[in-house]
Image 1 (spheres, rainbow, N blue to C red):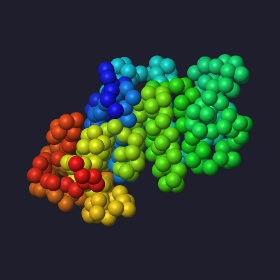
Image 2: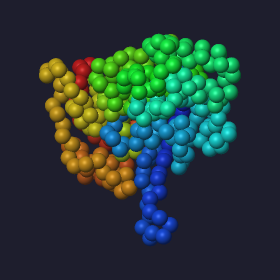
Image 3: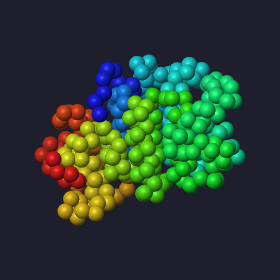
Length: 334
């Protein structure tokens, strides 16, 4: 999807480190949750963020929303630098950027009715003061996500996982935001329900012209909804490209490995499975040079010398790898 004008979100060299060790300990360090991440999201665009568990995807999402303060870097939302805004100054900004949580069970208060859950954002931000107006907004949101208005009188335990996630999406839409951060929003759902929720998000994106940061660990899921995809490994983006380009011509070995793990019923199209060596390194003490080199089947001695920066290798296609001589397997043919 093409976007016009300035991006709605501009993240510049975002860093989030978590200190470890006590004040009395002689050995202190930092966990590099996010280590210099940059990207933009245009108006009406969906950027997919994908990687293994522990790669820093959720930390990026929470830091972008200022649910936690960044260590360094800049976050520009609608052209405004929100990196260091106070809680009070952030309040009017938060209504325009909302979060869809991963767990549809833990994210809804079981003691509250659906009407109370959905009307809470209105009360917090001083919208729809009258009871009738609040009820009308709640019913409108429920219909928008494919639920009956009567669902407002029920409680979370009366719904399935997919229905609960629809309620969570409805809550995120109550203030009519411009940016939605969907953090593993379908990973806890059955495969058939995943497809329904993805279709819902795609419809909402078209109806409301939503911009979205869609976080997931499954490239197939990300590819179904995203205009562009950013691949993360150990706190850094190692490849970012338009979805079609990434699926036909991946340029980073880690992206190739992720593709090889995606199930496919077409044996002729499915790339050979690549089993990465070892475990994901600790963000407390990442490897020198390219962090992926300790598991990469194409690593050279030079990969340990310097950390490769993202560089352009195609139209809108960037990668952080020194190897330009590789032809990597792709799930789709160009």
